[in-house]
Length: 349
Ligand SMILES: *Cc1c(COP(=O)(O)O)cnc(C)c1O
Image 1 (cartoon, helix red, strand yellow):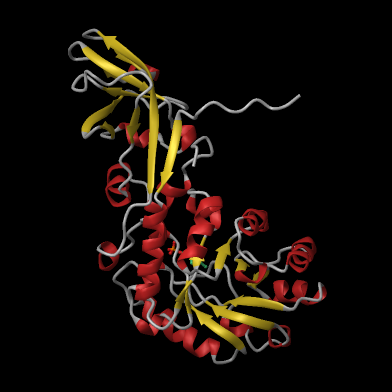
Image 2: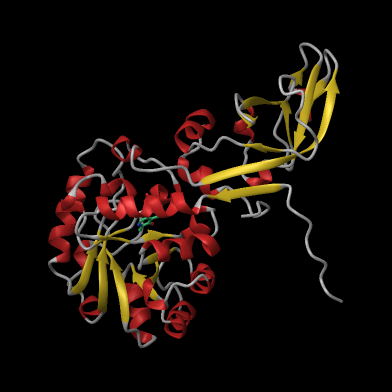
């Protein structure tokens, strides 16, 4: 039996590839003499590696980062070469190391134990993450002199900034620690800056920068705002138009009572798609420039909006969820990172 072709989706995520390419080029230019790579972990922050990776390759990106080995196959299938791809979580088991060897994808070594696992697997090229004060994942600077580190064949020595988007002296402290730590490591390239780190200036750029959020239209700091454009545009279909009388109740737990006769539209998206209940408090969609306020609770698969002022809105029409990440973060209380990575796999990308 052949699988029937899927009907057109009622939930879409438009990914503006031109905007994505333009964001990468802007970040590459702002990285000065350094090349910009790309963090494509978590399915390219929810936008889909299948379209994001080829677009970034076309734009000129040559170094990609994911977090898990489970993310590797899709990035390779999208066109990245194994030696252009790094796994940030490194090798946590012998099976990780074996998989790295088989695929040729490079682990980021984060500890003496990981270095040992890599050696035991006959490891060759790898990267090294040094912890410079975030105390999350990475080699403590005190371990740099260990023979297991000296024996690694390191391409990129890197560290990660904890607060690059904040006005704080932590970044300068991390920079100083990174400078001194990397002098004890033989590596071909060095890398420190994430998206916001790029805006901290040339001292932070080294050979390679690692933007993620900003590629996808997130704005981590004001200095980057004018350089970046929105990439992700969620849209959902109107499945039903209803007339709700005065005092009609909408949605779970009857949190909304109609103050007057209303026209409402029921849309095909919900919290299972990443549009969490926090969108319900003051959130809205839009259709042809008209605002459609969310009323009642966001359900798992549905959202009801007030379409009284859009009388021509019809079943089958698509509405836009405003996804200006700065504004959406403000109104939902979610971070821009969460807003992107929450977008679920029912969106047709
Ligand atoms: C996620 C990640 C990045 C990208 O950070 P953004 O803030 O999204 O630019 C860079 N480096 C490492 C190690 C990361 O984990």
